[in-house]
Amino acid sequence: QVQLAESGGGLVQAGGSLRLSCATSGGFFSYYAVAWFRQAPGKEREFVAAINWNGGTAYLDSVKGRFTISRDNAKNTVYLQMNSLKPEDTAVYYCARGTRIYSGAHSYSGEYNYWGQGTQVTVSS
View (cartoon, rainbow, N blue to C red):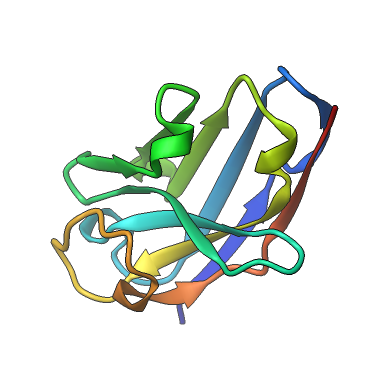
């Protein structure tokens, strides 16, 4: 059974940094894309970043140049390095694994069928 577990969230001041981790178990991790989504209170869940099986990436425009997604296949883990954080980055961050092997770094949530429980990121002004 595939399981994902996020960690690394917390409270940080504006301009600070956090690194989120998404540890996975089950399945053939290296064959699948993994994405980060986030959901702020009262808002829809939105795509943040994704990385496909061969390292191709995609980002939400508002995080380009500030966030970096990476993966370590030996550790079955995907990371989201978040720099220059802003209060509007405050949300619960979720990681998700793609439905199909060798799929791209999609921004559509329907392309992902396994989700973690989320980790809270709070950025104070």
